[in-house]
Image (tube, rainbow, N blue to C red):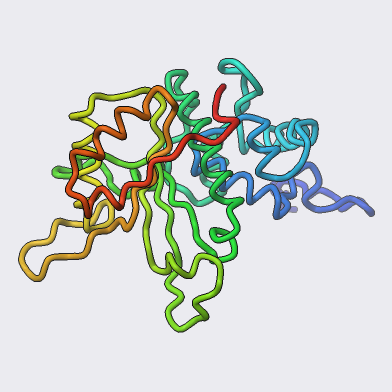
Length: 264
């Protein structure tokens, strides 16, 4: 008689789910993981603010996500624990980014940009108009590393939906169809360098990674506004750089203080 060499199949046990032992992601989990992926990493109190919950709940979420292999966590510097996505987590989000621990030298900047994003996303015109944040990480991925793809990449873009034909008294209607460039400045560069960045951003017409245009009518500027958020130490340099621009260009540069909560 022929012998059956097939591996024995497990016998179903009543009352036990087929996916027992795996992590069932909720809508909240998915929202947080996608947000984390775009921002490189974030601290526990930042996630608590994003999800409108307590840091104790965030610690529980960290544990669940680690158990599912979606994230790693660690104390990388002052303040709360940092969290970032693993390769498995990025694959689950269908994102092509490189999985890596955030560099120590970037922590202060990453926290500041995340705090700015939370502040923008809580702004009534932003969320009621359905605007969205396009992260530096996504822009860098789009730009790639090909020849001719160098240049400054902003910390983010804010995209306002085109609401042509809709009531003009709706929140954010005055920004319909605009794209804003977001720059977060913690330490002052030289006035020359800052002026060069402003000129480059104000002159940009195409999306990141698009081939250069040759011929035809001049394209419209990509950015309707440059939103520059600075520390007190960096503000004088950005102010001085703006004065180097023509009046019409300078009017598109909006310089503001960083919101509370950006410090490590």
